[in-house]
Length: 536
Image (tube, rainbow, N blue to C red; front, side, top):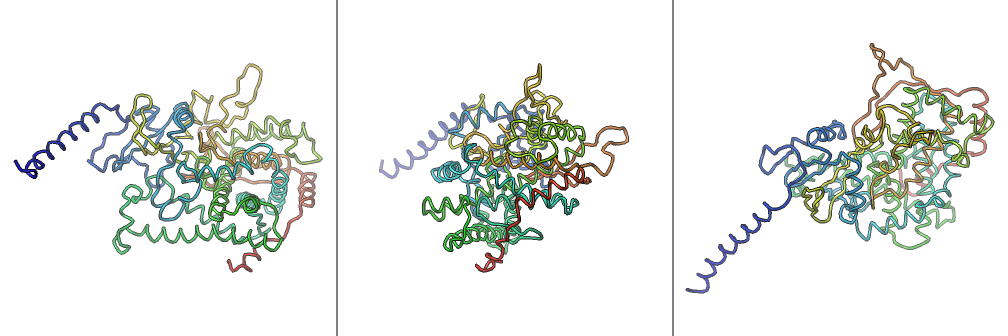
């Protein structure tokens, strides 16, 4: 028998042995978490993914009744694992964080647009640890975050003044305040007092694009990566043109603020900010650009709020909605402020420990409707067996934060806005602190969470001290039952438009607002500097 003849006989035999062994190993492995049966080979459960415009968290919540607290779907060989139980989320994402702390590759958002360089979509790597090290140094402890309290109180004073001037534009004032604060914090950039601001407008556009681009399953190229190689003229390839346009906007959002800070530092005109501190500490241009942008978009790393600004906008809009639906909560909070502080000044951070009901109200805002109902997906760097189920390497892990926050076994009457659930009242144990879930899990916990929460606290406390908000219409249906609030689908879930009116609580409150504005005068906008640098 010649060598070639023997090889032709041996090779098929070896292949047969290999496939028999592989099949045996496949049969002996544990099953995937339960889920819908695949009706189409290879394509899998494509029809089981939420459709555009659906609320993801409600779509996946149905799995809890059908399949239990952990379930899965497989689409084109990609496994999605859905967690509808908070204890499983803590066990998987925190206790087993060494395996489950990475991010799944997103071809459209990460590779084609460029967000793979950000903290939000970065795999768990040395680069991510460096980003987090820089951020934790500036924001990661209560002492570090407290440095920015004067800036937060100044922005809160400006926010109150804007509302007093035009109360009908409250939601826009919330967005302006949030954008002003985070841009000042990260880049030392001062926005326009009135009207639009070029950097704020660009940031809004980029973060809205990120929110759409990062939705799991929204773009087929994430499931079939070779589609990015198909020529643009082929029908269905519009996503490639969209990616190039969004990449251009992202590049501008990375480069423009960086150039602004460098220019201010070179001309000795800069004010201390996050990026200037990084630049003084070490020369690592690319890393510093993305660390700064990632802080601006830090919400993407805290349970999927694309921006710190959008997180604040959603949280405060939810607060306003809750006050229209639960006026007794508003009255109780205002009574606490009056008792502790009086009527001659505004609350400050120094009062925080003396305002337990306000602190509980902020927690309830985070729980009642979480800003990011589905956290940014995690992925596992190696295969695992979890509670008897096989979790393939690089599965997409989806924690249903909304389900955690509305589990009746965790929260009494979860659909009702009730701050008292977090108070240490006689005979009552406070319910689970929602901050344990609102800012991410394990090694992907948001490093800016202390700052985000304190921003909401100071605005809520000062707003309630001087304003009252009421609904313009009856919040009961024909059967005298309270109308359920509506929220929009998306990565960031905002309240649907609702009717309300805001007014100052009296002349003395108006005087307090004007006095706070005098104590924190508006500074000239830096928009002219951007124009000088050639950015418009």
